[in-house]
Image (cartoon, rainbow, N blue to C red; front, side, top):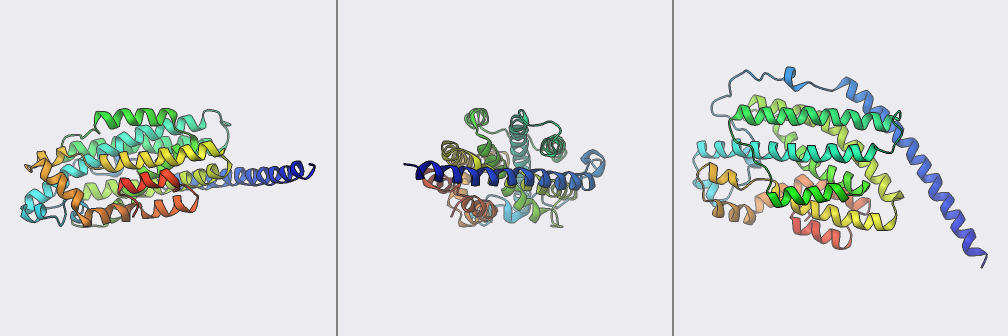
Length: 315
């Protein structure tokens, strides 16, 4: 009878010691990220030449990353129509980015609400919120400059996200943060050095890649910590909510209205994207660093893993 309480006490002491060590690391990570922010932050309003004309014959997104690339429909399209689709898909992705970053800012504010306001962890969260404000304005200007419409997510996904961000646990919030950041980051790393792409778009993606690298580090460190310290029910809920978020995100990634707006049959285009092995490979490659990390920290288990598979982001 006496051995059980002793074992529990030892275990509790070990958990507490680990947690205290992680809290110290949390401040160290935040201090490093604050130093990096001070050295490598940009004001897109002055950093980019918004008055320069768009360049004739250039893409707005690398063709290999356009959703219809290498499909039968793509092969029937003229070069001009392919490049026009890239313009609309860039606007769709920028619209998705703004939607996502507005959600992220709310999640970050919730995360720091009860935390010490003088901590480096909170100061970095506020710095990241400021970054995301600039990114959202930058994406909006890019959409306007390109002349394509904005592409909001569907009303259903808009309202599902409203629920998710309201009930999301702390680890769930950071899992969703990484979902929105890492896939786009992978694509943007291919975009900003690509000389086939409009100079303005390359500038936008360069700024986003540099600043998002800090956001990814912050979210990864916090999610790893939360998956160690959160109660079991919260970890299980996070596995489910992140899987559902992955399903929503994959569906919302490109608004199907882009196909209509470049003169394509929407149903045919959507069907060919869904059947495209190239597109599936692109999305899974974009998500691989994230899914490897989530698997490592115990996120991809049970029903949550099945949801990730159904999203098409997990091979």
